[in-house]
Length: 303
Image (tube, rainbow, N blue to C red; front, side, top):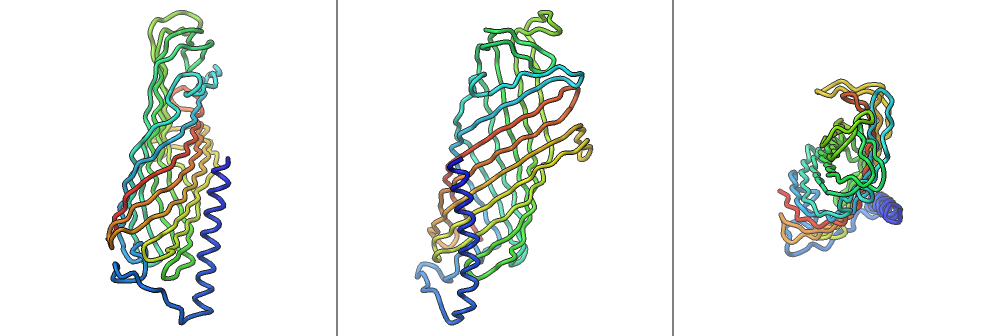
């Protein structure tokens, strides 16, 4: 929560600073920046280039849980994948982002995030996961995989030579997969080694704000906030067939970039993401939540 408040503060500061910049330029039209001799233009390349590509490493701290029952009314045990099933609470992953400026104010971007994990553990108590029961002290294997593609379109309602503040509509196309395997029971009867898998996949729409501010022709700071909270009785489109769908997304990110050359920069960032989704699918009724906080390091190219 400390990070959550910190990120909100940083994002709000960017918004306020960008707005102040526009006012200052209006009040002092003759004010100019001292150009960086390394760059041909004193304006930061982020605001001049159309295409941006970014690749980096995220050092994730993860908290994930799930409850999987059946449509007929069997209640699933609420499980922490880290505490109850031994999945790693930290993992380094690769992230990729692409952004394109359609016009001076309109942009589109896409981001890819993949976080697979698995473990072997001994249950501390009886577990009900979907149609299967797993007795206390049973040896089980657990898998939890998150794949997410974020697609976004944004419009900068405030724009100056070195700052912008905008609103964005995003689609978090998120695929959750949770599985548990081991010697199990079905309806109270031993059925030997069995596996139960529950997966949810649906596009989660969000609304958000973003801000970018070039402190100098080399230094850039950025912030972004996305949010949604929705409930649907059913979702049947694009190959999805889900009932009783609910989803929540809170995503915040702050970053700083240093431009090494006209086309290449490096930076650090911090991201917080809290995603929950519940639905009924293929006779199973479940809900999954994950929280990820991650310092990041990236390299960025723009043209």
